[in-house]
Image (cartoon, rainbow, N blue to C red):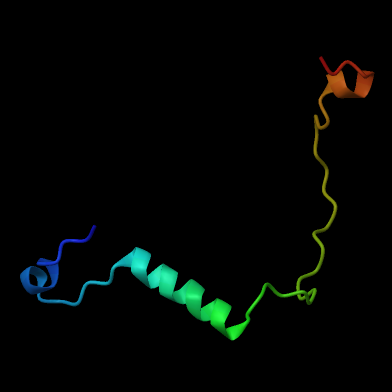
Length: 63
């Protein structure tokens, strides 16, 4: 719970982060917003991974 005397003591407005996050989530839901389905980012380039997968997996010994 936030300290209700903090704004008066500090002399600046204090935002309750949990209340602000919940209000933002509620606003997004009310607007019908969802995660983007558009592929705006390129797929990552392949890169070498030395030592991966571990030698045990290459041998079939997964213990």
